[in-house]
Image (cartoon, rainbow, N blue to C red; front, top):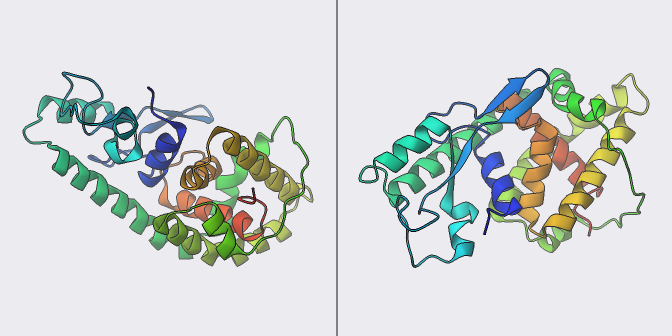
Length: 244
């Protein structure tokens, strides 16, 4: 059994595309493309004989987000060579503190993002629009109902509400953009991305964080991540995604 998409997306987004131990970015830029170099390490080993293996775990538990920690290759080697120090409980503590650090950085950045961060964050979407778009009408439903319908966790709901603080700025940015088709290209991208993700998983949290990653292009810059959260919240509030 491989790591499911839902676990991958939640782990990378909540880790801010940074190593949970050394906090260094685990994506490398090659020309205009970001290449992931991070490793999704199993806290309890994934097979007999591996570090901290627990034969009482099910495969589903073993490959779930809760049993994974995002690390750079060097830190991954360190935790597996020193099991006595890097116990299961200690790794969960490291992971939790790291994700809290990322969340605080995003919260600090959200009130300070400007048109520049929005433009830089969205540039890759505008430069690479979907090749195909299946037109479909989306029913308008209240935001509270949408949160419940998609079984979003409390933390995801909080991140969503946090992002909504930037909705007016994003609306202003889209309305003032020089290109008339700019807002429509973005709308098409997010609706199509949502529909594609929905075919792969029904995990609302995974879909939310996948959209955040798509908006930020896996950037580890807190300001770009903050902009991405705001953008996804903007389309969530517009009832363009999370409808089905």
